[in-house]
Image (cartoon, rainbow, N blue to C red; front, side, top):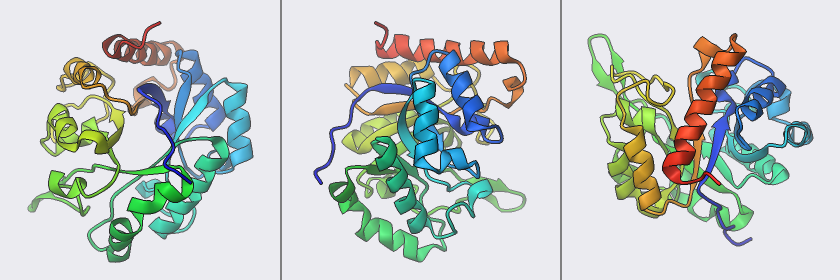
Length: 269
């Protein structure tokens, strides 16, 4: 199958912020804030794993599933088994069933030699076979007492990220790694397929703040994407835990961030 055309730019919201909540609730909140697309993070919730259930929920809420985030988080390490390659193929199958053009994956840990070899040898031709693009997300070093900054993931320098055919730029992860998102965009060029957008507190940890609540120049970054003719997709991937039990506050935060993105990207009709 030929590499499918990738629509863009599109703006979606990740269900990851509602990790411990039912997917139906996540969809209700996301749609209530005016979004028409979602990135679904695969969790233990069967609604995130089973294509018929996922498609039904998406149709019920008039939401388009634009990306599947494979279960690579620590909390989902046993979802769909422990083999990262197996997780990717399961995510591709799910994406095909719900017409999502993209699967987001994490890079290998340094001790995952087999997964690293698969990424180098098998990933480049995968989109030609399936029509679903698999993009590798940038991660970040972790500060450990007495050891300083330690990187557990391989392939995380810009030189190494350029080896992947498609890359996901997470702005909060970039901030922790000391990278300017606009410069990363320039460096990656057409390899940059997808953006996980959030702010960062600037304190050396991954914070995924709502836009304008941290140190990143989000407005400048979005204008830069628009000026460069970015044709990929953008997902708001936020830490919304302070707002989950306050429906009005949650809607206000999500609506604000959606409108900010639409204005800067000239997506407003």
